[in-house]
Image 1 (spheres, rainbow, N blue to C red):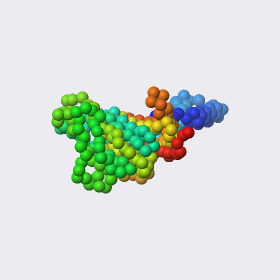
Image 2 (cartoon, rainbow, N blue to C red):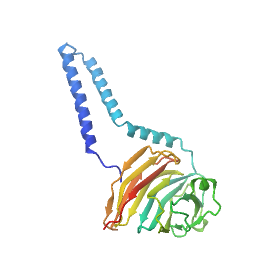
Image 3 (tube, rainbow, N blue to C red):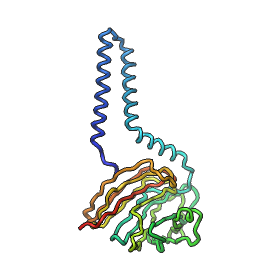
Image 4 (cartoon, one colour):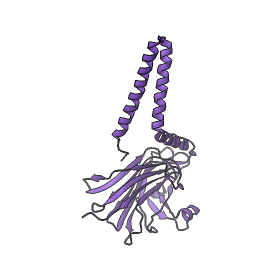
Length: 278
C-alpha cells in the first residue's frame, strides 16, 4: 500500500499557483501602466515566472526530489551482477500471538554464467531457525552449517536454494520462480521484535513487503522505513501505512511496494503490538 494522497497538499499547491499568478498579473499591469509593451520582453517575463514557479515547486517537494535523485544515482553505480531478482514478495504473518509464518517468493534472472543454486540469508529476532522449506516442488533448501563472516557480523543465517535435479539456469532462460517458507516460528516467550526487515543483497526490481495480522491482534503505529545502506541507523524516509482488511482471509495486513529498491539498502516495517482485541 503506497502513501495515501493528501488533499492538504493539493490546497497548498493551489495557493502557491494562485499567489504566483497574482504576482504575474500585477506585474504586467504595472508594466503596462508605464508603457512596457514589447512582446519579446513579455516572453522573458513569462519565462522568468515559469522558472520561479518551478523553483517553488522544487523547494516544496525537495525531500521527494532529493530521495528520487539519490535512488537513481545509487542504482546507477550498481555493479554488473550475474543475477537479478524480479517480483520479490515477502510476507510475515501472525498465525497467533505466539506462532508466526514467513514466506518469500521471487524470480531469478541470470545475466552471464549459468547457476544451479541461489545463496541467501535470513535473521529472526527470536532466535535461530532450524528448518527452511522450498516454495517450488523439487527445489531443496539447505542451511549453512559453517557461518560466514557476514553471518557472524549480522547475526543472520546463510542458506542455499538448489534447483530441481541440479538444473542449470542460463541467460537464455526466462526468470525462474523460486522461494522459501518457514512454518514453525514458535515464540512462546514473545522475544520476536515487531519488525520485518528485508535487505537488498542483489539487484532487484519490484519488491513488496507485507505483514499479516490475525484478527484478534491490534497493531498500531505502523511505519515503513527506507534505508539507503543496510548498516544505516537512520532511514532517509518514513511512511505511515494504514492497516487494511482482507475479507477473503478475514485478516488484517499492511503492504508496501518498491519498484526499484536501492542495491545494498534495506526496507523495514515496524509496528506496536498492543493488547488483543476483544
